[in-house]
Image 1 (cartoon, one colour):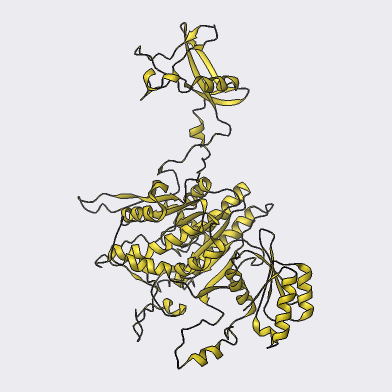
Image 2 (cartoon, rainbow, N blue to C red; image 1 turned 60 degrees about the horizontal axis):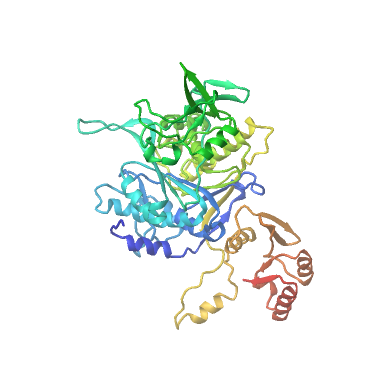
Length: 564
């Protein structure tokens, strides 16, 4: 097990609850009402905690590209107690009370806790991410040499060593280093792959024309190739698998045994029963060379996929990724080191089906969102994404800042808008979801209980006569309640006669009352027979008799009733 300074505190951070919520921002969204895609602006630890109830065991694939910890990367502070707008300040780590004001600082290599700081940042996030994965889900994590070894051990602890799938080497196409004789040019980064359980199955990939060229034979069923039925290479002797040594009847009725060129008794690649099945399915081919029969198995090209390997030298490189983003932003370099769309597309192809949910909580320039929409356009899929990005400030000297992007999250959202528009225009006849709902991490819209003392107990109790915060608005409260109920942010919402109606993907209906309540409304709700009704206590205006009567009415109709 990997140990480091501060590990116990990292677990404490994991277990600490979040008192934040997600506030909808329709004005920054595209097709807010109907899109199933989600973009969340905010610190990802709080966001992951908020998503736990609604998205537990719901995500098929997670891809993240966390800070590589090169000495120039930001590492998040997870014990800061300041308001959200404080982490947008670039100067002064602590306020006058000694509380951390910034959510991130650079993790210098001269820091004695260089690796520890990074691991403390990653541990709680990976545990929370694991909770969101489906049982057959898989996570892909991009990393380089700086933390690859530590990350592998950390993932062994979080996901289980038995759930390690692969460490993929990716050709970046941008060699770095090699400045001295003692250095080696770095042309790779890595992709750690872990499953949540043994249920995961990765799909194959379509073959390229070059790969398909080895299928050099053809018949009425299509192109195919042949391979000897006799086992070659290691463990090819009769004694290795005695049941796979038997006679086969050649076309001239002679008996053929698996004899190696060296003269020893070998074996076939399968048993007699499997051979009979291949013969029945016309997947056996015989050849006679100077009176000697050789038997082969036929492999047809149609429908055949290749399994992904652990060396990805055929995907787009980082230079192509940078060009793609620049082209979207009118030849302006708004983001450093984006991941290639083709790289993400390959991950999506091997790990997701057409209607799966994908999560990226280090979204950066939102290559993941771009790749999801593009792949949906290609294969008519309905994959959905949740992307999370903190509004890390851009450098005032950068092209991004000069182009009007004050933080990374603004770049993320704009890329989704531009990529979505481009994809929709290129596929006008396809019903694609190229929109997205924007949410921002914010303070709760309900007052938070604070442990009272003898001096302020009365004040605290009076404070909570109405738990709604002064700044709360109905739509914002709606989505906070929705998350507390464990419903998804993409749920369809309909406002009718002062009632918010929610219909989830399982056909369950909910009614939320936030601005008006009376007996006529209650009767209308009862006619609709929702599973649960939630309303604000203040809507009863202190009428306890009406409140009790309403509770009994709903109970008589087997409707759950919750007052807040």
